[in-house]
Image (cartoon, rainbow, N blue to C red; front, side):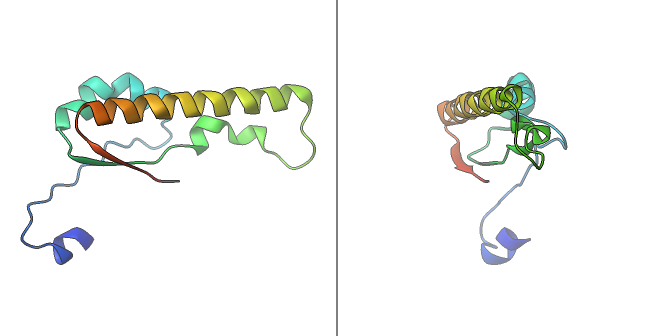
Amino acid sequence: LFLATRFPERNILLLNAGIAGDNLEGALRRYSWDVAPKNATFATVMFGMNDVGRSFYQPGEPDAETLQKRETSLRLYRERLETLTKRLRADGVQVVLVS
């Protein structure tokens, strides 16, 4: 509605490829059959909470195992976000990351 009222002369089609509870691993797995065929020109990408493991950020001091899990999940998040962004850009899509 925001775009339609501000740019009525443009033919804008918005498609939501998001799935509640999904993460970047899932998005990458379904990219070729769910996202790429839509031939988007612009994409907003918002992932994070389901990727970094909310359970690793409970109140109190984390133990060594939890710290390691945090580090691993953050590393994978960065790698997967970079992979998704590169795929989108390779398909000619302008990407905006939302946090």
